[in-house]
Length: 339
Image (cartoon, rainbow, N blue to C red):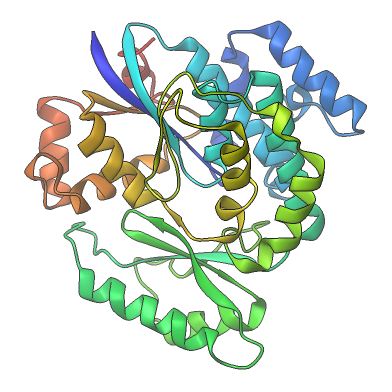
């Protein structure tokens, strides 16, 4: 049986092409419980959002809607896995909450409570914003000097009066930068446009994984007790690359990280993938739905880790063609490998 690490996607992965994804959710009573919980809070149900006639950026990308939709899509694909031996779970940003549920550290319902609560708090406060900018060229060859220059620019802007700016997510060949409007505008003015779309502002995104989110973290801790958490069934790799081993993780520490460091400090997805590769050496890196956009960041992270000797996009494509290692469950032919 093939071994696999599951990599849960974060915000921005449920777009217009993902509308209708919950039609394949394998546990309809569980989805009905999610819908009932949303109704009780006065929120539109996931079934209604996912079953809408058309996608609305204003509605579907909101934190209070997008987070719960993404969680349900990810969890549904986790439940659909067959014929693979999951050896660890990780995720990107909001995907950490999904990873907790997929690894058993939160029940499906408690995972939904955490995701829906934090997504709603982020949307209500909407402190700051995010943008994405690549430091790798289109060949994906490592360029540590370019990365260092960009991070130095971020640090410089952050020293200016009334400018808040920090690294939000180290995302493969991309830097997700977060801050207040002055900080973001200064960064946009200082870097050249590349690849026809960067720097790219992210709609309805707050300054995740920065100190600006301290009020959200505090409110999350006030609303989400330790009793929601339990020992994971599978190893969990967090946004520092740290492994939470079953039997060694305490529920208090898991909650403290989830509603503390994970909210207000940079999320190092690249290091999480490096840990997944080197610590667990899986046959497959599986990305559940929704969407396929996380695939590039996983591939770039593996290249930056020197996994299987890969040093470029061409190396990854050759490896993927010879013996696939990346499985995106939103792509039917790849999904068939693991369901």
